[in-house]
Image 1: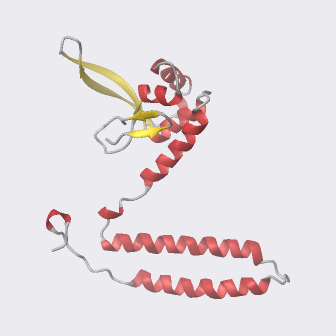
Image 2: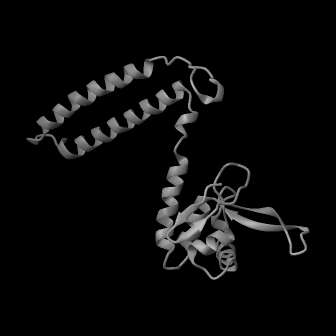
Image 3: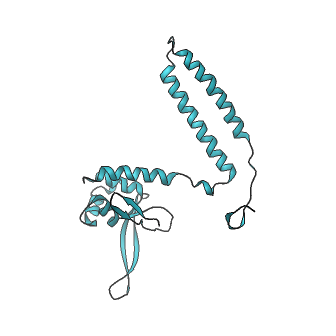
Length: 190
């Protein structure tokens, strides 16, 4: 798992085998600048009714002790959403900055990996984003220039003409059939 950096803290997320980011109680103690992970566990236990199963879970961690024998310990881990909730509940000086950092991390992780999308899915994603932007432009234009009787209504009418033209192009793009490029050995085109 890739190392993450928040302020002067470098954290390697826990690998839960699902490809998602998970933070241990120890990671969270470091990020929240608590003395130890017991503080994180107490914070969680006082508010556990606010956490869902997707936000935290207990896992078994295998490690070797001083005698090089396997030992099994249970550890609580938190998803970025669970970590964010901990940041909301914490009263440390760094909690506010941590919450912002975690929200950025959540947003980044939610973005699709474009390299894994087929051409049709990539087209659908692009068309959807274009539609979303047109909706936002239309809402802004209506709010800013859409008062009936206003001298600014002429500007709104000009915007509507452009918005309709863009909507027509987007509708045409949404009907384009993308050819399947197939699979290439070693991920490269022939």
